Amino acid sequence: MRGQRSSVVGLIIPDVQNDFYATVAKIVADNLAAHSMQLMLSVTEDDPDRELRELRALLEARPAW
Image 1: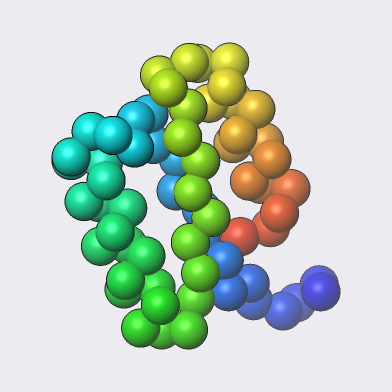
Image 2: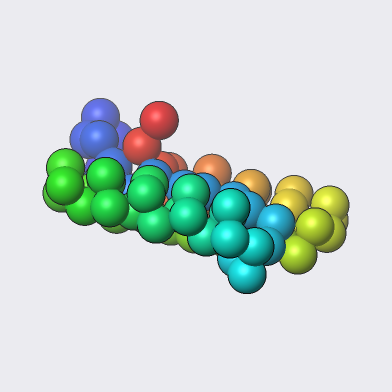
């Protein structure tokens, strides 16, 4: 996969039940879909340790920048 561009973009948010974050996630997902790309969503519940784990996992998945 080296040299190939990923079609996945990651988004890490603290709370999916919050209307603001849910709206942002939907807008991002819709815009990515319009460009044949996918959203990888992580919800952290405002837990800093979980945020770090999710970020590390996301980077391992080699998302598009």
